[in-house]
Image (cartoon, rainbow, N blue to C red; front, top):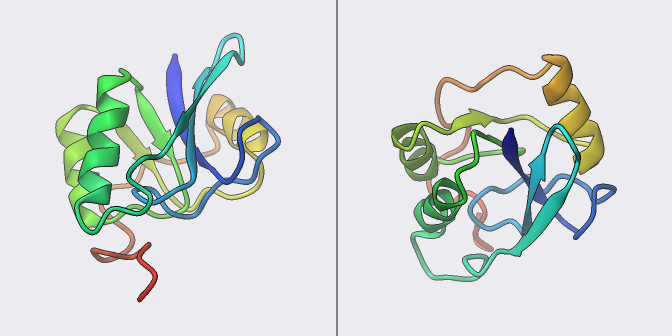
Length: 123
């Protein structure tokens, strides 16, 4: 299964980025093999719509779940509409997050856990 984790770096030992729409990178990980693809987040510095655009990017990659620290309402609704499970409150390394997800110790989020524009410089 392919899942995406927001990350501050470009490998499995990178820290989970607490932001979804404006994270530095997405690591799309195949949970069975731990093979992964690094996607630089081009939406990191856009003026608006970062969450929606990032959510669409993950849906286009056909991920089944997104693991992140926080997810705003617009991104959450976009992911939910695409059938992508959202897990917030995730921290530690990407590798640890994948292990926790595979072990079933992370719970899907029912709604956004931060307001709109959470990851912008002014918030």
